Image (cartoon, rainbow, N blue to C red; front, side, top):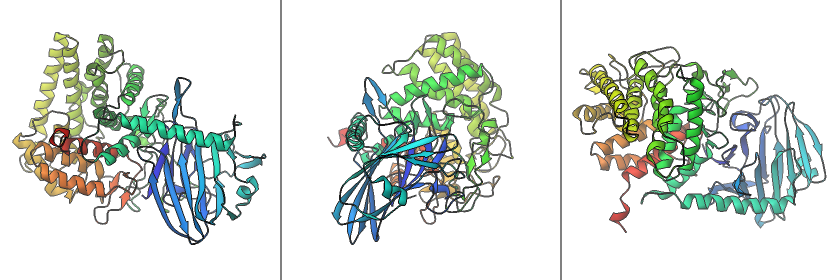
Length: 591
């Protein structure tokens, strides 16, 4: 997808290559979209659900981020002249706390010639079904929906915006779109100040990252993108900004990813922590411990809302046509009903760094450990029971190897935390359980026929998720069984640098595209088993599959390089960071 994302750790918007803002949910990531053109124009007409700057006679566009920021610049060019569009969501420290309003700011400036533009601002409500009532003032427009109202305050002529009239752009125009509140200062001055402060915030944040020697641009962009997917008010981390972009053309695999999966979030905080970006981990730990406390030792669902909501009932936005006309558009995610037994391990893995990293200011003593122990009990009880698995299969249950693996990780990390806290009896207890689960996996997930660890106990089919055995430390990378597994998976699921998730047909048929994070898992495994050069070649090819702004969706069609799936996908951006940090030459080798 040729687009970028702006945000401020409370809201996020997608800006396409032509400078149209076609996705923005309010009041937070999982709210209703006021801009939804990414998924169709809804019940109205083409152009609805977007904020576009249309240049008359458009011939070319270019788009980039300001270096090391979440500020996007789009340049539109025509024979008559060119225009620069600057988009961002304000984020900076003010009055001793972080300022991150439910607001986006847009600045348009003439760059050359005498450009003529049309400003088309058409927010919609109720998932594209409700056209707002519009009221106006001298410098603002209010868009009143059934339940919410947003306000545009601008230096542009209100009449021309409402009439969508083509006008000469002979000066900069500023647009502040957000809550139905009056601004305390001139919109132009406020927009320029917010731009400077937001740019400064992101550049300072990026400056503190512990980046590898190579591929720094890719790592910094991935880190900023992961940060944008964190919901700072609660500490949750969403899987992606969008919903219902299909995993392949007309596949029906259209899911809503605007929620917090504990699995994805663990990998996100781990990647950011490896770059010394610890604040996201601190916030996520608080979210996690609320999940743990709410569960009271019982079942924990694999995905929750950013505000800890448990009910994510899946419905359909019938008025939206879908991405490129490929519906359905889903709201909510049925996975909240699933039993995915890797959940307990992913929570403990996500919490474990807090007990060891002395940079973090968190209450992680014996009491916190005791809050986690019931999750270990659940992992122990479920390690050999059937579940929906990491891929959230809707019609099939098995004892999935990856789920049992994460149950092992739960017990293993509890043993390590107990040892850290000098609780010798608990360390022995959990260490013994981890050893038992490992033995079961070695015996029941290994297939002599396939000469590989397979997707389920007693199964015969291959699944890329078993590569996580090396990632979480359950098996030595040079173990012949792991080496053989990497080889079999590469032969069977590899498609050049890309990787299928599994070989067996699922609820929707056989996989058609590469799942990006699986490709990154493979290159990590290749590096671990000593095939470093091959891993670097794959990594270079995967980086080439990013869009022009350095972002990745969930999937890539290995036949033509086309991106599919929700955007930007945290799993994929995590893979960029992990790949770069593990494959880069060391600083000492050069400096």
